[in-house]
Length: 393
Ligand SMILES: *Cc1c(COP(=O)(O)O)cnc(C)c1O
Image (cartoon, rainbow, N blue to C red; front, side, top):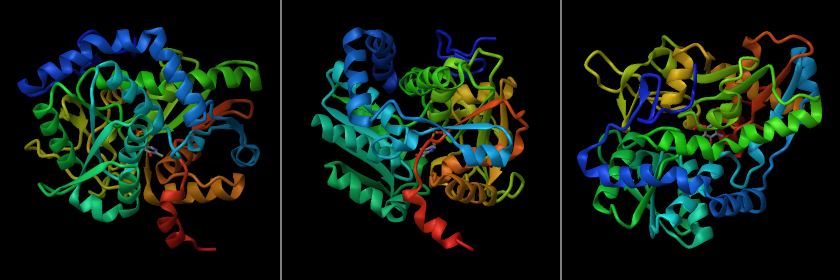
């Protein structure tokens, strides 16, 4: 079974491009040119240069001695938290900004929920002098004040969206409306492996630098280029897609995905999309999403803003439902415990999203000599208020 996208943009039965007719020209332009651009030598030279000297790649693969001892196996942390802006998201925004330049776009739009993708987008726009407009639900603008300030300092215009629930879904609708109205000069930077084809594949390719580096680093450190277990958290699924990429068809590697169970899978306050979701269409692709019997999308909940998304990228719907990836739903409580464990054992404060991946270490059963890689998607600075609140000694 192959796990690459097919010609129509499908992973198994998930994916595709379900878009309003008015978006056809924009999507068609991107679909026709993205592969040629990504694979061209001049694009790769500039992409690699910025990943190295701007984002700070390669990120280290760190052998976590005390966590290894705790779990009785060999644990390595892929330090995406050490990227500029503190997470893997910058890999994608650098790639898409360069894509926009090649397509002669003058204006960038983006949607953001918690603000992390908005900041990563505003960052690369500042770097290149590109105009940047970020749509954000009005409720999120209030809740994520410090990221809004960062985006403004970086020169982006943040537009609060007052429709619907005033959160991510509404911001996305507004960004799409903008794109329809500015098809010629604007590129829409989507923040994860979601949206209509070719976005999931394009974003996966930009993030695949993660598994490319893991292969080289494992070879240097353990003498073979693959792990036995590869663990990542899944919101939309971009850090996981990047960490899995070169191992997707390698059966020696058990892929482990951690999604957010919130207060519990059956609590009604959850974001366990792949587990609870049913097929439907969201943001232009067919995937698993949390919806009621009438097809109304249910509001997701998680303590971690980056995992709080009602759908999941089509690749992950396919990995989960085909059985290629082992899926674990992690509660807020378990994620918090894992964040404290990692902090106290390794001196690394992880993002709350990442803490879900770390919590999955309790649920797998590797042998003593097995090699387990956890993708440490981001750092915990942004989550300090929640951590301090829970700090009980
Ligand atoms: C945004 C974010 C995520 C979730 O997004 P994916 O597309 O699923 O990777 C995970 N970790 C961190 C640190 C994030 O900022």
